[in-house]
Amino acid sequence: MKKIIIALFAVALPMMMQAQSEGLISRKIFKGQNSDMSFYAAKGAIPEEGGKVVFKDVISAPGKNKEDIFNKLAQWASLRYEPNSMMGNDYREPNFYKNIEYAKITEANKQSGEIVCQGAEELVFSVKPLVKSFTQAFYLLNLHASDGKVEFRLHTLSFNVDQGEGEFLRMSAEEWISDDECLNKKGELKRRNGKFRIKTIDMVNELKKEISALSAENYRNT
Image (cartoon, rainbow, N blue to C red; front, side, top):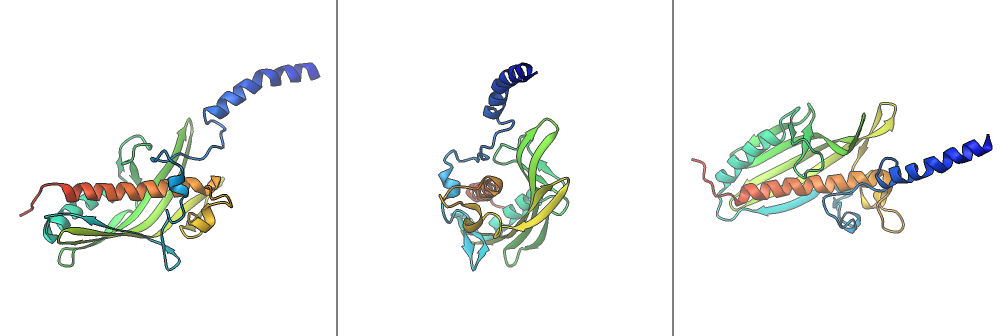
């Protein structure tokens, strides 16, 4: 019997090693859009303001006036934050997203130039036969249009973290992807929540990239 067990193990071991190298049972950390993983592990990659995770930027729109920018942003946001909608079929594409029913625009004030979007979407880590690894992310995105620029502010970010057996726990960005919570003593990403940090950074960068593309377009709405 022992000889049979040893023989079976000898046959199975190469298969197990191959499966691990192909990611079926691998513990390798999730890869992001940036091939340099130190980009995601850098201190401050998840910016904080007053102890809260806040992504802020000013996106230049040379030669565009406030009305032009607002109209283009409102058009973009109405599609990007349409509830129960999806862009693309491959989660590995930078512009892929899948909104859930809570996604919406909560404010669009042309006079003030303010647009507030309620993000509620799936962030997909991997898809295998019969298994999808993902989280649901929730956040607020404030966009403020003025002559020549867009002020970008993403905040109030949280995730539904899978606890197994269909149970999820809501975790804030501060307690899940911040430097203190997501980096180990070596300054490396922790395995369990590192993928959340990577996916969040990619999402924020893609949003800013799309807005920058809008700001660079030659348009004028009348």
